[in-house]
Image (cartoon, rainbow, N blue to C red; front, side, top):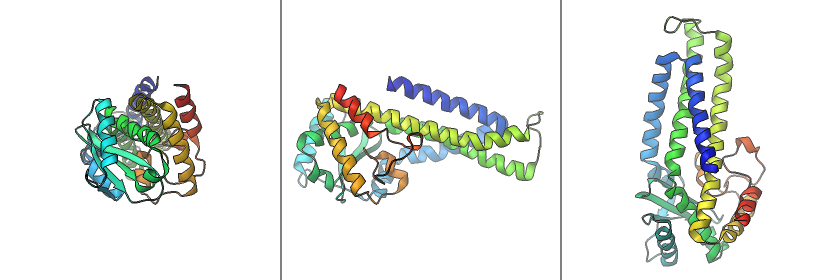
Length: 278
């Protein structure tokens, strides 16, 4: 169900790009914006593991340093049918975790020092399985494609702003563009693209929960872990770059409520409810 929802959202994002591109930039503007977005996001995608790990001050740990953690990751990766990812630790007392990497062959799992203290073994299994599910499902790639389309729409909006300032009502490919239509599109399209991109992120979290529960074999443990992590992060938010917040299994920035449409994470109550029903 959530996989189909992701496909529909990706199709909607593509359609929005085509409509907004036609209204704001014409064929030439669409091509330029798309190429810019592809170039920047391809660089980010290809270097996603290095950038994410450095941004979050994660350090790689050897099997000698963390034998239990390495053993857990290796066992769950084998169950998931993917290569064992590299293992990292973030020195932070707030319990949380994330995964990164452009594909299963170039992936990493990072956990905070706090999560190793707060969760029991079965709960930690659920969290690691969730992160391995992101790797198995290639969610970094899906997120990068969504970012390309949303980024292209943002570039189109910027180009349209300059066009309206300096180009006036200049025609494009022989046809004039309605300034009012372009102004409305200029405001609505980037917002709509961001909302769709966030909805895609939420749908992938649901898929990772379900896949992770299948990998570890006990959905209730993952549900229990999510409940603990949500509570702990509400009490003690992490000091992380907002750009990397969506990578974590639970929102690390604030315990306050965020309007559902503008959140990269699904409602915790709904995530737990779905897991308990499995």
